[in-house]
Image 1 (spheres, one colour):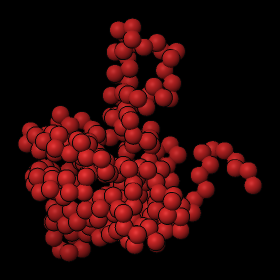
Image 2 (cartoon, helix red, strand yellow):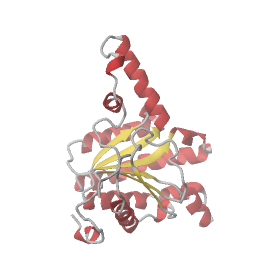
Image 3 (tube, rainbow, N blue to C red):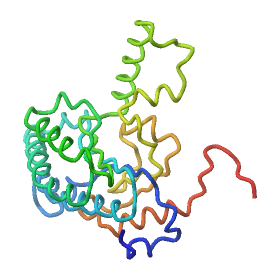
Image 4 (cartoon, rainbow, N blue to C red):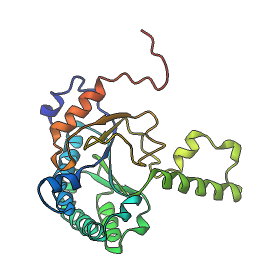
Length: 247
């Protein structure tokens, strides 16, 4: 574990176990360079490496990246096609790094709607990294919080209809068990880049008591130092979960 990153934190022992990131600003970054939006997505790969390596070094257990939302299909076809090609290439190119750093790759979302080649590359990467015991890098692909909740409700309704689940037994814990993130703790920290003040249909159930950190930094410019600054801000928060803490 890197002592240099830990040394910058006010409470090195208070590391979030799960960090979620809305990676925003690729398009604006590209426009400032006088380039097409896909140029920003290509240059955002280093930011993904920075966040992933930084979390691994600091001992974060889970990092969930909002990589592609269900709404993103409405973007220009050229951009969507470029994103899918970039995704396939990146997964293939990063396998060696994932294995070297013992990072396990998982994914949430309606993966069945992704292009066949993207599905294949993702499945192979998940299988190859399944036994890794370090950071869990969780990609949200063709994902939206409302879709996830509807999907969970459909699954529970089928269980009720088949007599495997009683409506009166459905609790918050039951709902959580039917979500894509079942088995993972809720994020303690959500980082959003580019300064936008919204959660964009991301992890709607899981973010109920998550601390939000908004930075003006555009995603392609995100560094390990930005990650440390976000965690340092998180460590200064008083997490009350709706309660009043005693003095």
